[in-house]
Length: 192
Image (cartoon, rainbow, N blue to C red; front, side, top):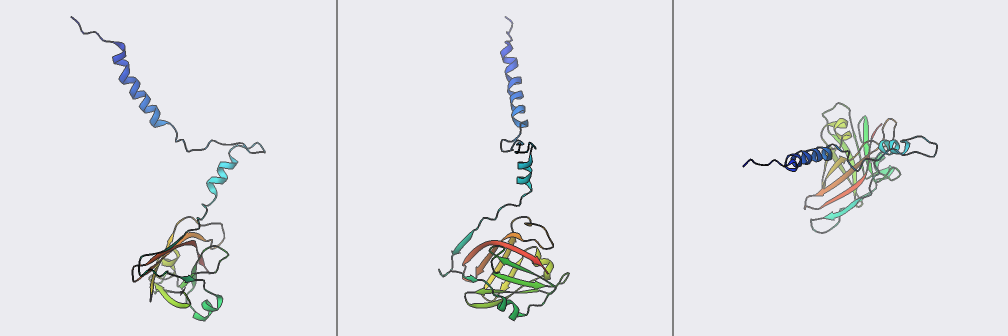
């Protein structure tokens, strides 16, 4: 007796492979198709969405850990910054948004190994902070060391807008010696 070859047994594996390959080669479902605008141009809306910088999500994570007391960073005034007479060719500042006064200001020299120096106000007390590497290091986001806090600036997105020194979305993490930590979201702006 000869074994009978059923066409279904031959085509079933081939069909499964073809369907698998088709599923792998399809476009992701989250891609948007070009849309027509009111003037008839296609794709204007999707191109604008691709080039626009991401919106900053206002996040202020309350103090966690430590003795339970909050980490309070207060906005620096022009008098605070002017009175400190920070030295350096260029500087950076961290603020909640473009219109808000800064929580951290620092200055340093370009292409220098000398530390950058800065200010932060903890409650009502102005503290000096420093960071290794001069201006070049602080422009990219870095750690600042002070008497009661360690501050870490981390860039979280591309520059917003144009010009010589556009702000960049960033977080400022404040760590206290007792283990307390608080994270602020805002903008890091560097320049003259």
